[in-house]
Image (cartoon, rainbow, N blue to C red; front, side, top):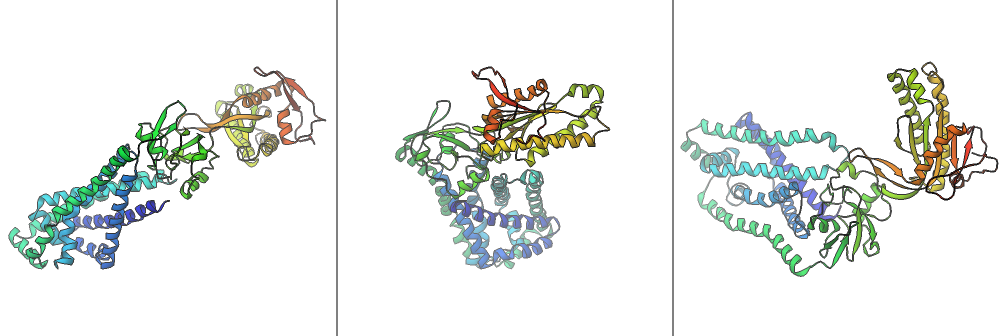
Length: 551
């Protein structure tokens, strides 16, 4: 996380904590005015000390300054509705609460006012009811602003999906209770005393002196104008910078042939958004979610190396070379990139391991299929067949996991596994052979444990082939799995089907033998022609893999 991001997060957390205390305090108005005052002494006393006030003021100044700077540094104002709501609310909050701060905390320090809750509620309900309504609106806006920021921060966390609904409930209920407590306290004050008598008594108790308050209230107009100017300044600065000083000189080159201009100093994500190109960025371009990941296919040498923030994110998803975060790279030369996730990607998609979006790799593919599965279905009830298949798949998946393979897909009574995704191709080939042995051993154990359930012992056919394949996340957007396609996969499936013809449980290709370093002189060799290949595929049918010393 950059220094700016840390300052924004820390200062925002302090302000959100203060606001939470304030809302809880208001909610006690539903009990009684006395309870509201008692809660104020517990929840707010620390914030009202000189240290607490300085701490809170510094947090506000830092948060506001960082926000203004971040707006200026943005290379596009194209953003989601929630991001726009967060930005707009952050700029309007200081204007809405300015009068309240001048009349309470600053008046306390400068004019000697004692702004008790009775004084504040009376002022907002009796003296200036319109201001009272605006303060209620300001509370809702400030709370919404904080909740949006908290949501952006937490939504990349693994546990957030389970806690999102309960937290949303708190986010809705707390301000509702706070406003209800505020209204209840206001009515209690109104009904306690006659208005004139109440106001006079409260003003006297609060040591209210109009001559000292008026100079403070006169500051409201110029300070409001100042905040308006500060809020508009980054937008004006952006206009001057983008239209006059920083005309695009480089471009992003997309796979469909589109050239997206990149303003000087802009990130790839900002350039895409400025051009109206949808691109995923769940965390808002802060380098936390990795959903904006792209593969750099041209001009990588002109990019700066990943900083600590980007590097940590890339390592977390085990990204392969050439994968970068669009929100962190700032092209200085023409740059060819290919998005790796769809624009609708979620935080969960961002946790998908990198490099699996479509990478040509050397892998060993293993297919296993149950023999006579149709006969099994004829002799057993469907529920019994389902039970047997579930047991089979459970055992096979354990065999794959314990030998370092990856469960890629299943097709009714068989499955496919990939080896070598996280190791060298040679180690992957050796592991695939071990995986085939482990599967056969587990099938033997399964036949013994299910002997009373099976009309005949389960038998399987296993085919293995080694070569290049396109490995990536495949399937529907919300149910993708890491699988592979290509000639290597087709040949492995073909070899698996040949186990029936040769009457053996395992067949592996010459490529598997070469990669795994298997001595093949003593093994039976055969060949099969494959459509689209000039040379036939050489393979080795193995009648008893568990007893073959060559393996």
